[in-house]
Amino acid sequence: MQLVLATSNKGKIREIAQLCDSFEVVAFNDLVDLGEIVEDGDTFAANAMIKARTVYDALNDPDAIVLSDDSGISVEALDNAPGIYSARYAGKGATDKDNLNKLVEALKAKGLTESPAFYTAAISIVCREGEYTVHGWMHGKVIDTPRGDGGFGYDPMFIPQGYDQTLGELDGEIKKRISHRSKALGLAKVVLATIRKA
Ligand code: ITT
Image (cartoon, rainbow, N blue to C red; front, side, top):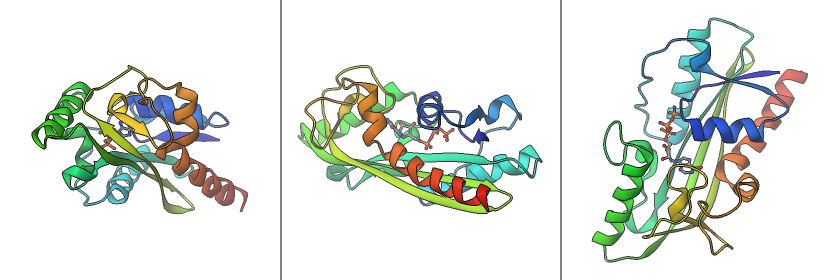
């Protein structure tokens, strides 16, 4: 079964391809030329659905199955910022490094060296059978000194609950087991198995 991923984020594409290795995974950019998808929803779920619907409509293939991921990190000491704005925390076009630096500065401005935090992933599926959204979370804390270069995005600052190292330092196999994305994809696979069997 082919899954079209409605994302341009290489870190997400890598992780989703690893977590969905029984599917043929293709990034939408390889199939259609779409401009920037405007993510103006108020929630992870709303933005995930915007991306999946936009790509499904553009493909013009009723049999396509499109899967999107809207995700981000929420830091308790910052009133759960950056949340849905995680990709553009340091401004439009910000790199992962810019966003990481901005989070370091935000913690320092509060006089904190760490704060409880959690990642959220909303995964939407759009296909001829309907539209579905599932969620996954990973709890832990952020620290003010990034460590390691594994994963992507905020991973060098994030220590999952029950661990002493950041996701930048931990083996990728651990993130694969415990991440917000793997939990949401576990549910997404149940949806896919159910609809394509019916
Ligand atoms: P697409 O919209 O094309 O999927 P994006 O990067 O703009 O790509 P989002 O709007 O969902 O996607 O923003 C997600 C951001 O949250 C991402 O850029 C990272 O900064 C952060 N993020 C999400 N999941 C993460 C993870 O597993 N590890 C580290 N950072 C993550």
